[in-house]
Length: 403
Image (cartoon, rainbow, N blue to C red; front, top):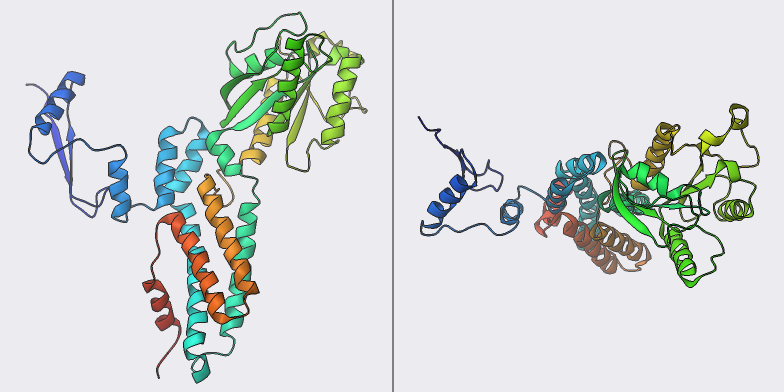
């Protein structure tokens, strides 16, 4: 007998959208699916769903918050393991729950302030009501500040960190880019100055999404093409989240190597980190050209990694170092609080923090209450929730008004 289709019915509110839903599980190729869709299209009142309509219906029926909707979208488009884990955390509601706790704190403080305005003179409220609200809001302000100081790690995790490979000519930059990309992104040649432009490729490095840039060798180019390539290379260096500085270990004494090394140390210091959080890994390539006795530590250099792009020796240590650096740049989705993954999150948290600042500076309780309403509105926009009824619920739950 031919295979039979399966009809699965899920009644609301237990379905994905919260509505009554029916799923058709059919066998066969695209022609069978097309035939079923044509048959359904002939039924009056039925139409194809618009893009994202099922998710929108789930949000409208309270099955998903806005942050969970964003997590679902990120999960669908996740290309690396770190992106998948971060999207799952957001889809599971961790960020939304955190925002709800923050909103509850503001709602409670607003309820206390409004209750004090309305009933404080009747001595029906505790004397330390406002002091308690101030204490809770100071703690919230510190928590928001900590999340906003994460250097946009969550956005880098979602869209990709910018890693730039730089160094003097013929140090092996293009060979390293090809090795990390596992494909021939850049032309490799013994002739110095082969790369004259910035070549970029999206790469999965140790589970983290990366935009990897191969740049022209930094030297005093003589022609206009070389000079333009060097200008673009320096521009990418300024935009980089992580710089992989590559030097030829057998040519460290050359003027080009020394000039590049001096500029790197001057801008990043011995710890390999600028004040803006830009990170640096120093890689000494072509270790296969060194004799065994020539591999001892070089005290005049900052911390470095030895690598041979030709043999692959040292690649494992480099990948481990890249994983550590990228975890610092992007955040580790397996640990710590949920990350902010979108500019929208930063905007609303900054707006909430600004409103809390207005609350502290307000010389009038009515103005203080209005500042808290603005702060609460920003947090509500994060998850798509919020309503004035919640303030009344808190007032009558926390205080015995009207006795």
